Length: 565
Image 1 (cartoon, rainbow, N blue to C red):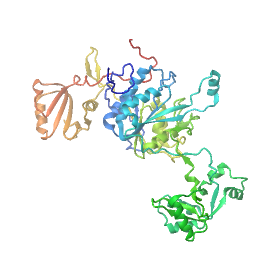
Image 2: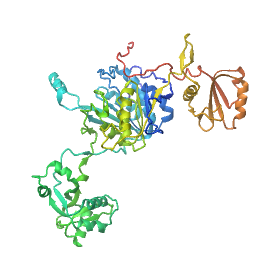
Image 3: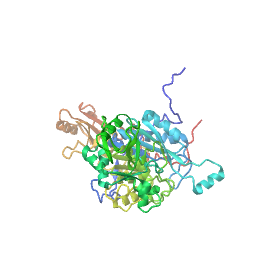
Image 4: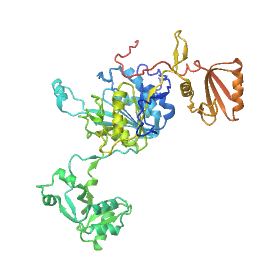
């Protein structure tokens, strides 16, 4: 009986690895926007996202704090921007290397968020479980449509179940914890909050709240002196005094800072309050502090003979929000046509949704990435939130949508989305990159040659990636073009390498230095010249590294592949 080692998802072609060429990125300064920030490191990349992710791998492995992607859902519903009809195996074959690369780019506490609908959710979750481990994963269900309008009319006529939700699969490198999930407003006012705090100023009330939260702006005596002045009245009475027939829900929210409820006081806190009340605190309110450091405001007029008195003040503005948990129904997902000043029918995600995801695991200055940038939402939101970002988009809308949108963010004219919430008025910048062409191509006779489009600098940078070196030419030493570790260097040349050249390089080397030379040809007596100098021929030495000449690993294929039975 065969022993099973693990539970996994299988599909046609899974065992065949895609060996992606590590391209270099070339800045197109005509499309970069550095008018407000000449030192910006934000990156907008145009090109196939699998090639682009491979291009980023060497420099950004383990450095990205948050990744959000919204890949084509494979739902056989082609749009003007994405052709989405892919056979499941092909879709998984193209998603697998992308998820693996994205996972490697994350910091040790980085967060990956992948939005998907129910057509591919189960397959994608099992794929991610193999790469990320289930203990590091969580599923969010988010409402993406309203059960109203023309859509519902057609659904009702067909007698089908309308699709209102999508999923966001979260995976965090060090386990799903320490995420800052922003609280959302309660759907309706809690009628337990029906008492108004009078006779103290807004400033005094603010100081009291800071004191209760452990910010030691006041001493206990100063806090008690303020609270002695407090008078409690019903919200009905105050609303009528202000000319309202009754305290509407809107009025309650507007006055939430001064509206409280009295909660039950138990245990040691009750004993502390009773002792302090008996020492002379008979009117207004006072504070207590428990042995664990928790502070409470207590209504002085309470019956200390009651076993569990309701006298602990809870300020409504501190309890008006709730944790949305794993079911997000509060984010408006309709009417987004003009958000971000670009039109992207059926594909644009709300800025508020992306803001919530980015905020969960980042702070200002952290690096955010989206490799399916689309209309540019993730980059726009990250920019407004003060995060650094990398966005990758393969289509023309890298120019017509993402770039156009980000330029509006930078000049401050994009005041939609989250702009007002984060007080965005413009600034920052980005650099626009194109993927370099393939390093090796075939000539007219079918022979592999170095791509003639590569200049000397591009050639060194490209080969550096292939060999695992970081391109950083030494301005004084010609053979130190790239470096790996402390003392290992790379020298690339299209000239013939002679014995005399090797002697020159060796005489210039320190005792602990090593050099890899990559060239088109070399003298026969150069192969074993020195243990501190290695030599390789191009393009022959590179051909086994990866597949060259492929520019499109697109998920956007109209006709699925055909497999032999």
